[in-house]
Length: 374
Image 1 (cartoon, rainbow, N blue to C red):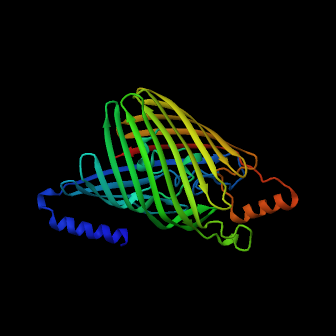
Image 2: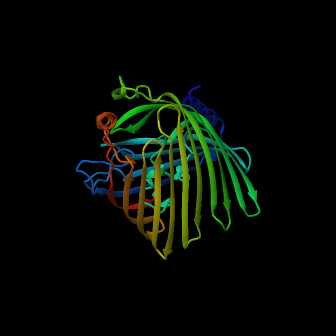
Image 3: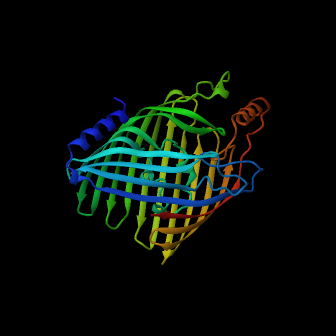
């Protein structure tokens, strides 16, 4: 059965059987108002998951407004939806991030079904809620790799209390059809079949949180400009595997975070290894952090970056942030910079026929903005 039809049926059954006084509604709003700009590269060159950072000050990469709605249908059964208004390339629209039922079967075990966040990263659950992390822009080298933000399916959360903290296991499975995938300066439909994953988080009282995750899926995407080339069918029914390790620490004064990821896709697509290391300190309402990030392409080279960031907490729910990021690429790496499909094929032909190395890109990214809750 289609997950949304299943969810609708469950909602109808639960709502008709629940006593009227069981219902309780909660709403939490969040958003970001920010602008960013790329300097030091050719005019018109763009950067980022959807190429929304270029040589003009733009707000569509960072700015968003969202809300999370929860309704308790009956004891231990809650329906949750999250909607975000954000830019998709050059147009704005509404995205349904979450729509699921959660059943707390015991104080340790929760089952969920519907549209769920894909739990591959340490910050996946709060991806659009900027106040939950120190950056204004999450480290691109890691967070640009997987563009599937959610899927339709089920998951299981099981928490085990420990003398020094808690251990939480999550197992998930499902599918995601017709998801937008940005590559070579254009948007394409990607199908993710047989999405499956498992992750574990060890949260300690004094030493921070440790996380390990694994996810895989069968991928299907057609790239028309590859037709008739040796790369035709490069993303046709191939299997992708993603592994991640993470660490997070925050004692109110000192903070640190790190993630290391590896993505492997069958066929001609290169494997990628990436990581970042962040350390920071708070001085009352003022915060400062420094991040080093790296992305290695199996076939070409490396992107590396340094990010310096400052933040100021205007209130418990509002944080002003500013960042400077220096990005360098080496050994023909494109990194997170954007090439069109035609530009990529032309550069590849020049390399193979004339021996000309593919050019690299370097630049500086400035970003300022406000993260808020309401």
